[in-house]
Image (cartoon, rainbow, N blue to C red; front, side):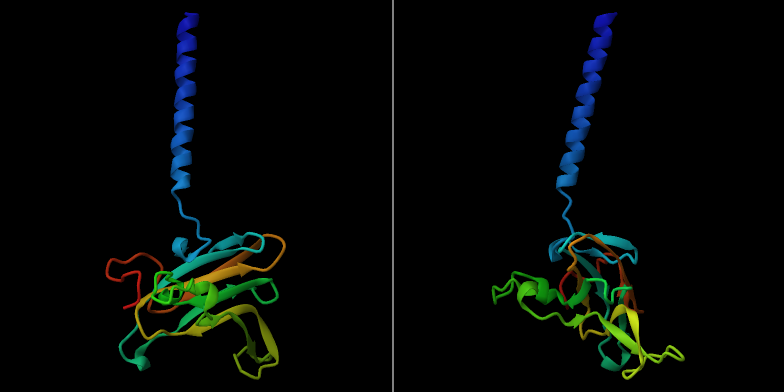
Length: 186
């Protein structure tokens, strides 16, 4: 009887070790979102960016052929002003490292946009360029001429991990993969 329990124990240990090996292999194949290649869709949830590191997010935008019909995109880093966290917006071409210029683009090119604090009137909270109050959020508002996947880099300049919430809004914004929209701009 003792040998049966020993055999069952050995089988259980082998089973546990095999499961851990499978879990480790599965975890090793997950691409982290610390580069454009691993960018995940924006989920409007709280995340933590590690010490002096960057995390990458993406969204799809469907541009109308006529500029007058394009709807704006609203990217917001909630409470990002004075937080030590920066937000930058990039096109697919800027983060694609296989272009003819052979430049690791997102490291060497200026982003198409950056999150900035918005000014507003303190009395009625209406955004105004010369407003006397400044938002706690960092915001970027814009449109693109072409449909495609666009990227947001969240960079922590602090010597400690920092929580952040990145939100995106817009009538022509999608936060899921879509077979009709390639990963490159059209």
